[in-house]
Image 1 (cartoon, helix red, strand yellow):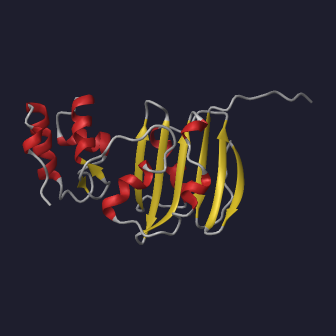
Image 2: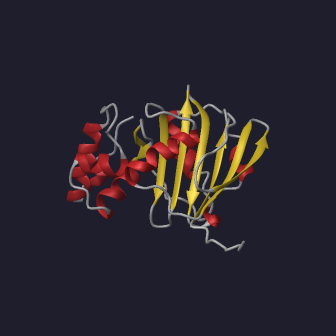
Amino acid sequence: MRVVPRTTRWCGVLLRRADFAPVGDFHWARVPLAGGHAFDLAGWDALPSGDALEPWVLELLGASAMSELIVYADTGRGAFRFAYVHNGRLEACLFLARDGDLLPARHSVAERLGAAIEPGVRITLVGGMAAGAAEPDPGPIVCVCFAIGLSTLRRAVVDRQLTSLADIARVLRAGANCGSCLPELRAILIGTRTGGAQSNEPGP
């Protein structure tokens, strides 16, 4: 028998209020917490992608396709964050990264499990849990469903060259749920592209 080292291609931290045993081609170790359970994850194969990613993440979080999720992706640094909110409280959260330095310490997020999560602070829920450099200010929340801020929207329109509401929904998910923010998204899209974004602040 030979022992062959394998290179870790990603690592992760999963926190859940409910216990379970992860299933998959990756290493995991469970650490009990006062309000739930933490799992250290490490994989030697690439993370699931495309249509395979969502069901894999939902299974780890203990959520369903109809559950309320908060998603933040920093594809440039290879860091991804997911939070599952149930009945207004944080039920589980998952952090994945190519570089372990981009993962938060368990103790820094464990106290949030079970805590009430207000809609206006949901972007900071996943953004504030990150390690490494500070996240850009998202600005006032425009899309409450997915906690997408005004500054985030403007940066995406410029940096990703978004030209339609469908582009915004595809990249940020903003406007893809209840649709109440679509008029503001349309104004931001037009204002940012024409250089008049400062006059398109969303109302209270």
